Length: 228
Image 1 (cartoon, rainbow, N blue to C red):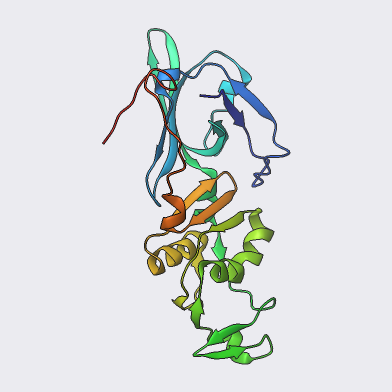
Image 2: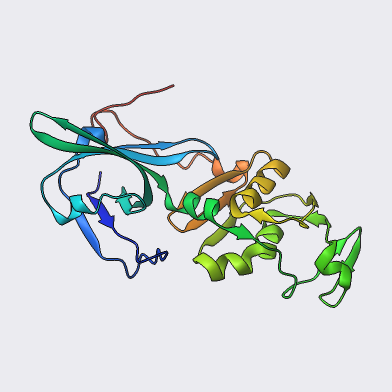
């Protein structure tokens, strides 16, 4: 496990290229735990003791922590005091999921033409702004439709992996960004969404579950293996 890095966002900005970063030395190694579940949970948990360092002082709500190469936003802090030592138990949500929950998406037809009931609508068609319904769409089309706002507001990147059949999707909706991904998941139910910092990968099941020849050897790569 790589060292835990802490950063305090500048206002509402989460520009990680400009963030001041401190390394936390007081995290208890056995307490560091990353939890991921398919298309649902991606969070980190760990406990740190007060060593008086600037990094420990940065452990605050909405601060950023980097664990194993991924950035998380601190959402819960549980203080404790035992044996004369102050400790805090930290829970953080993956930064990409935090972005998705905080923003709304609005369809933008200024950069494309779309289909409604089998007919192509241009940007000068009044129905294009008020009554758009895609009769044929893919996840890439949905991302493109909302992608202009996403890129401007937060710098998120989206990458599609694998092939998806076209399906009927209604884009005439005011959605949170997470709801846009939920729309993809509800239309293509075997889709796997994998956040990698500020890049969100969208996989077809065939592409995600390939045997890539990777393995973990007990007592070679890891000291513990738990299967369920």
